[in-house]
Image (cartoon, rainbow, N blue to C red; front, side, top):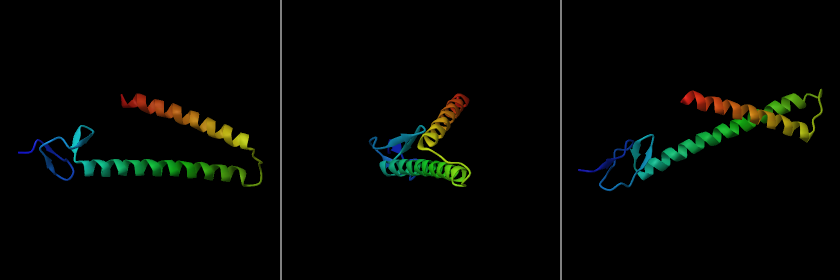
Length: 96
């Protein structure tokens, strides 16, 4: 009887040739598939955030009513990052 069993594909292992996520056991193939999927989702979220920021700046400054300097863009991005950091800290606190 095998000592370990992958919780996704059901492969059994006599030796511990598996990885863990959330206190679950996965074979190496399932582990890397799961990790790859999580990285793809994170990458998509970062791209979406970047596209939303670009769209916001385009809508704000491309309408011809305001001129923009690189310094203004930098300051807005810095302020947005500070808001995001505060939101992340609040989320961490709500996880406890």
